[in-house]
Image (tube, rainbow, N blue to C red; front, side, top):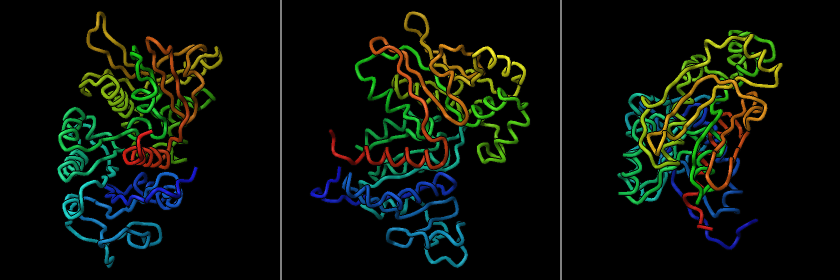
Length: 351
């Protein structure tokens, strides 16, 4: 429904990192510009794209011509390139109330550079949305506290499974229910590889195909080793339970040692092998256990038919039963859409 009578609120954005997700976000904003104004009364203006060496910035909303030549980022001779300029510099020069869009590569050990970007945004009175996990895995409790101290929001649904609405369900749709367990297929790359192994390929063939199609990264270690999934189940658990578990608390086993014969045999029996993330409470209210490993699930499991690059999550609750959500675009565009959703939900009027 169009909201023609409402005034349009202009929101300044700074995007940190300009890889696949950052580019997809910039493109999605251009595509959705009129829709955002009509439906939500929002004009989202990217003032800068920040990289380690400097920023694309010229004092007004960036356009494609300011950041690309033949589709590739460039700096030499570009009048909008500011070598040495930091995202924090632009935030300090701009009124409070903007939003940082964090898309840098994740470092699950240090959280940098995202940790510094997000902290700087909060200090400047800016909100932050994140698609990268590193800063959140390392310092989510501290970042939440800093956001509260500064009266700003931190949202990160894009970091917990791209377009699959994991946090939306856990934090809002299950309000009033007690979560008693979480299981998820949270990595599209490993799910694609296991699906293709069930269809006849061996592990090396399935991985090569995934890389050729751009589903797997050239260095897929975080995905196939289970660490991407571990970061996601950690964030989902901490957010939904208001907990402070660390990555060292997650037991992790990847898919490299899974036998193709085992996967095919399971498929013939109507079962599936999935890289399953599980978060379960301990006895008598003790610490939860967080686990990522290849698991054999039977035909009655709610995630058994989640195949290819799709993902899914299942919440066990005390009063709503088991609530399962599957699908969601597993791609840079899906992650960009999650970032946009989070921004809209920061600024839209409550309903």
